[in-house]
Image (cartoon, rainbow, N blue to C red; front, side):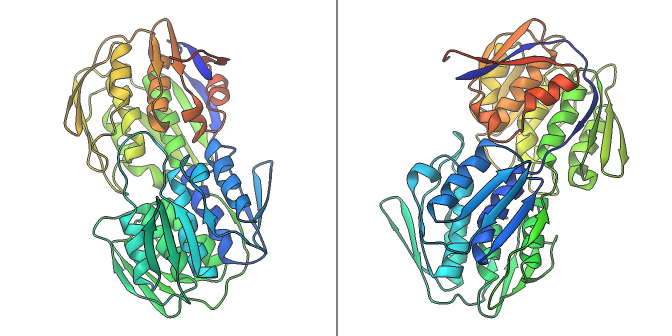
Length: 420
């Protein structure tokens, strides 16, 4: 089982290119089920989660080729309508196959999802949305079993804004008869990217980028060729890498507007950020100011950046509070950060952080994807050697993160490591 070995204390400097967005890719891939033929997803990141989704779609009969970040998806013949537990347990995004399967084939059997080790993320919003479109759904033996004739348009109001449920219903509604209205829809860039793919396939969707989507169902869709948006969470993580090490980094292939909340908080903390056409540059201050954040739905501060911000605030000159209003128990990284010398107290869904002058290297263990990123960030600034174990978590969502950090001057290497 691989680990990262980090010699901390080096300010990062240089330029890197941000990879395609993991969360967008995991929605675009199953969307290809909706249209028979060959679709192309360009700028696809080479990640464990993409490999997992590839394996799942292949079990359904989809032909897939992936090379040089070009993903080719052949959905001409889909002859399997089940997403089995052995695939779905690895990744919650696997539930995205539900909407496309029921819309195109009128049947689906999808295992209840697994994924990260923290926090329940119930699928009831997905199920109720698909039911309102006319599907009959039962739960049996840990599976969602759905069947339908042609789906029909409906008005769907989500009590809680959900990226996954919005994407699933939007895909299903694209082949439904009539008009579907989704209220309190998610507005994340990844949903906008999915809508763009569906429109390129021939779907008619109004209100893209807002919380009110109107979808006029089509009789059929056709394959499309799209470029995946840059990963805003990877970009935010590397901005914090520059900030926490007192460095100066430039990111290329970014959409600055997707990072507005992160940029604003970094500027509040004293960082200087310059935005260009598809680029961002950060210069760290001599001392990091403490800044409170509350993770919230887009366009708020992303919950996927909460752990990384906690690491940054651990070396700020004062007290900061990091609250997560989306996932109350997403703080598995905190005990590991305290092993490095961070002073953090958990109070329900908030971390109260008192900045320390220095973190010190130690062995720490990754528990989930974003917790892994936070530990790497802390290791970059800690004195001495930090070993981050179980880095298969980080490989789910960051493409060759150690190579990108090395190009910025970090002393980080991947090694085969013992269990911890």
